[in-house]
Image (cartoon, rainbow, N blue to C red; front, side, top):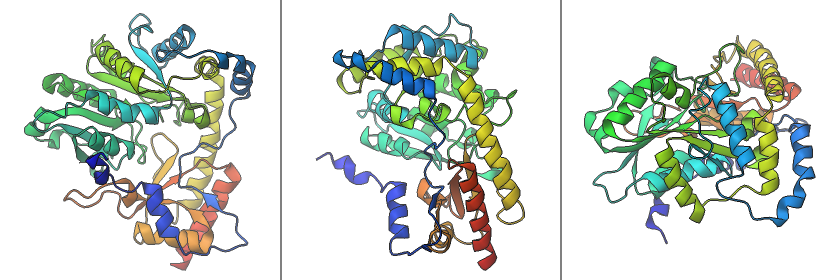
Length: 399
């Protein structure tokens, strides 16, 4: 067996299951899950119909590179969304469809990391999407955790990284907007990171799966490739952006996303995925093309999230007092007792599940930045989110 498998930590939801074990929530209260970021809004009907209409394509082997129509639709969306000149994103060399960004975010480390280097490092925010850590470990690298604290706007403090660490960095994962914090990296922040990537020769893997869930239609979160183009990095050197239809279009079961950026890295990733990656089924590619080509359903999706945040924040403003995130669908709330006790009691007494923050972060000598916080995903229908907020207030009153 691969000895590095022993270095993997239990996944957060495995820890959560153990925390809840033995609890008997009230039977008269229906369970409300705020723990997992699984969109519950309806999938766009036109995408579903498109998928069904093209199931006859199952008789054909799909290409790992994806069909021309899908790559063209993705290139057009990227250019329009992030204000990139249309000719800069070449659908032939700058992007690849992937079978969900989870798969791609893991696989990119296996492609990039040189395990024969003296001390290969992969940087990541802390707290973080656990795939980053597992990918780094199984690629033979050591994770470096960059704490995301209120004092630095919940963003990794790039100025605190030692030069010798930058020198050994082979890749950095960033999440913009952040999971679980909802923090958004500015264009200036992204450009500082791009300059560091060129100086120390590492690749930026920007997880932008939450980029289309924001509150101000006139102020969408910036992206890595847009920041690169704005500073004259027309080839997106050292930059990769990962996007998904899961959150944007409420299609997590479609398993459809893409990676785009540096053509040199994309070429090597295509080689890797020819052997390892799952090519998108032909019908999935056709349905994905339809989804990337439409913005109306995405605007409507954001309206639904805005309604939930307005109602829930109003109910919790005088009790738990969570801060509204800059983007995304998570509340990263402080707890008056330990995060694990809060989560356990909320489930046992109110039948609401949230995720303890410490399960999403690591203590690497400075304390766990997720401690005494919980992540609450406002993905359930509006009435359930409002009900959950009321139950949270009931627990707080009983503390």
